[in-house]
Length: 316
Image (cartoon, rainbow, N blue to C red):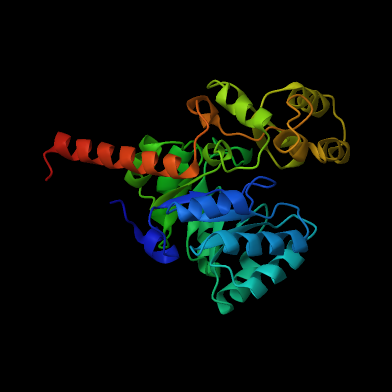
């Protein structure tokens, strides 16, 4: 059975972590992932603190396994959400869109492990020095907000420059991705798009089907002019977004244009007017399955690949 230091760090069966996706990483998905042996992560996004607390309580009603919370540090409610997480003493916090360094001592004092998402070696090293317990090295293949380096290039460079365990993210949807991540030196993987297309995820069926229908070239990057590049499925909205960026519209107007669009796409199922966050692996997903089946298939495939590689090299 695949077992890495990430499994020991978070007391989970498999080195598989569910991305903390805003709007759709709710208690239903989180508890299913944790019950299946992975690590579920509640996506706080820009939600109010009471919603986050409710999700934590609901998840605890549905699983006795470890789970965490992802905190979007640019959220207007980030400080209050941090207070909720500290009070509730979740197992682990992941962070994105901001510098979690100032908050890490508070989490550590509360016994909460911290695993920031990073898109560069420099940020990885800085957060390791700040006390991070592990790091998610996320390549630009991923859905949602992205950096500028691919997973294949980023993961081994981060692994080589830090001492804490590294989790690979971006462009991973099956056992081949898990085996490849382990070969790059990662101790586990984080997946978002694959779990968005699970039966337990509350995302709208239109959104899930759009991912299932996607090809290898279906995603597009927008928002680069704002400093927050986002990968999503191409649609009418992304084309309008890019037109506004090229026409010289102010950053403030572009940001305002995007307000509420993620919910429209993921929850309301508006395929043309909503943002359909998705990674480049969308073209690999051809079926919506239960979380447990997804995880067990990924692990079985990775184990078979690793065994095959051993046979190729004659290693017993």
